Amino acid sequence: MTRYPFSMALLLASSVAAGCSRGATDATAPAATPPATPPAAAADAAGLGSGTWLEVRPRTLREEVPAVGSFRARQTTRVGSEVSGQVHGVLVDVGSVVEAEQALVQLDRSFFEIEVAQRRAEVESARARLASAGQAVETAQAEIEHARAALGESDLLLGRMRALWEKPEGQAPSIPKSRFDEAVFGQREAAARLRSTESKAAEAQARRTEATVGVSQATEGLRYAEQRLEKTVVRAPYAGVVTARLVDVGEPVTATPVTHLVEVQETSVLHLEFSLPQEALLTVRKGTLVRYQVEGILEGGPGEGEVERVFPIIDEGTRSFRCRVVVDNAAGKLQPGLLARVFVTTRALDDALVIPRTALGRGEKGWSVRVDGGGGQPAARPVQLGVQTEDEAQVVSGLAAGDRVLVP
Image (cartoon, rainbow, N blue to C red; front, top):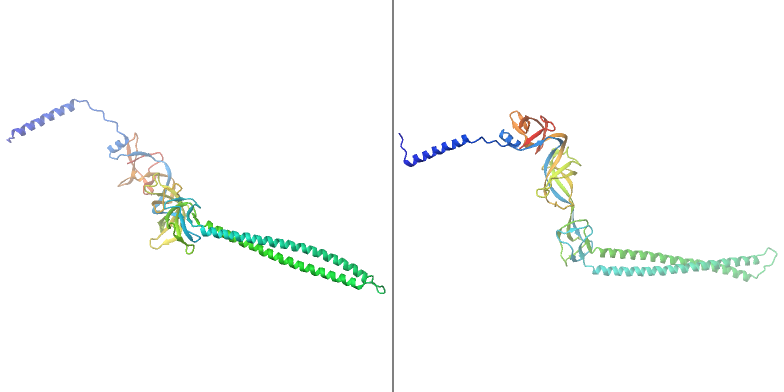
């Protein structure tokens, strides 16, 4: 017989008494009503897991090829000056949002204003010469009219004198020969005066033409000088963001070679470029649907776009080709250089029964899902799958539209 110390015997007695007391209480207490079991808990209790019910509806399933893309500015321009001079002021800085034709850099205007003043003086002088030449032409034209009138009168006088001097044979002339010779001389002198006046008019016309050309040249010189003065303000070629400031006040700049002043990028529209394996070359073309996701930027869901260009070059190192999507960035959320997860649709199945892949189970007999067997109780049902994507699968048999599937 085993003997226990007094303390151990006391502990055993207490334990037995406590056990007899708990058993009595459970036997006399009324049985508690079990709580209502929700569908998810019922599924869990049945060993089928817990989750939510999803009603299966036909929709479009897109088979996609994943890629990694990078955003690029549609245009990047290093702006230079078209005239040489000295920087008087830099009106923008890195990060400045600018509009098209907005002033970026101001050059010193002093020498260009002097050049404009000189060209204006030349224009005024040329116009004065043209006015003088025009007056000379008008004077010559008046002299020509006068000479023509004088020649007409001398022609008439010569005709009368000839009629009086040249008589039929046997008749004496009515005037002396001196008067006839005087009329002939007068007519010749009037004709010579007309020719001289016409020659002077031609010279005056030539001078006026030369003066007209001079005015045109002086005007073009003034316009050129005014444009050079205007080019002292360097403006943005398009709306965008200043990404680099390359000069400071006081620095000299030249037009040849060009001194770059600032760099501007167009960010209201971006290019999303990515590479795909050559196997996708036959299924991806202009207009192919593309989804893209940028972590931490596009919180409202993935963006969508279409392939705008497929580059006709295969990279021999990676056996891949590049594609481009034009992305509207008017809100300014995206920036050049950001990486994006890209999903390119290679095939679209309309009216497909699609379920999440997490709703699938794999057993010895193949794929199965848990459907509502009545009263929210899940029951396993085998299914056959079609196209599968990273997150979803097409069910080709085993389910019908309206069935409820348990998604863990």
